[in-house]
Image 1 (tube, rainbow, N blue to C red):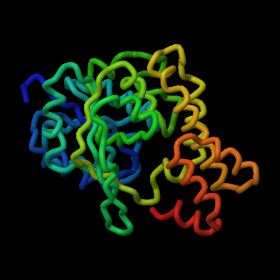
Image 2 (cartoon, rainbow, N blue to C red):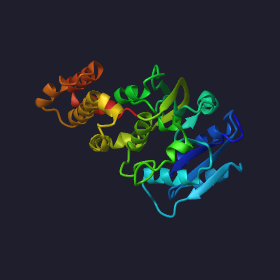
Image 3 (cartoon, helix red, strand yellow):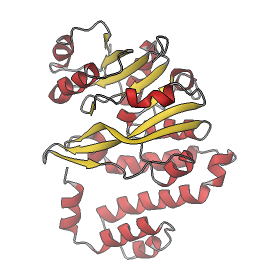
Length: 301
């Protein structure tokens, strides 16, 4: 890659000692070497700083927050420290395969693409098992695909700095009003305006260990998605063309949350309003399953 095409790798960390060495070592082992690490320590109380300092590499840059802040504000603060032409993200409990950055070469060299993501493996820590995240990622109409089936892992995401550093909202590139879907909101905003590039080869391992914030706070995810829906400008062409799918997905998310909490007779009628056949069948199966089995499935990580 060209010398001026440096990649800034954002690693946000709060008490990440359990998996941090694995994460940072995966950066060192990248076949692409033109990068810097922006390590943003959000007031960790564990040995995260000590682990970071074990990596003697001038490309590793440490920043300690003066106070504990929420995740997407922390991501925005880390972005301010980045000097690369590209911004990549790696959560401290995830790790990359050695060719992750090299696999994005076609994206780096083609200015028309503004955002990149790869396929991934979901790694179940308790079972030590890898599961392919998606069988196939889209090559065209990526915005339309993501509306129906959002498949972008934050640790697979690379964005041109010129795009992500544009101040499109008062709180920065990442909307700080969200705790879970801030990356979703940003990706959808970029994908609605620009061409994006995906690679089907899985080059990221995403850890599922039972302490993931999004898993422990599913109800908050539903609330945030409803908030995002109210923010959408349906005069914007990509969103107006896909309004029916967006509403369908919103109904699915709300029903999934409601049914897994408490089953009610009127939910069955709402399930049949879902237009997506796969999502409709999934909700029907959940509706007829006994509660103890649903809880077991939801807590399998």
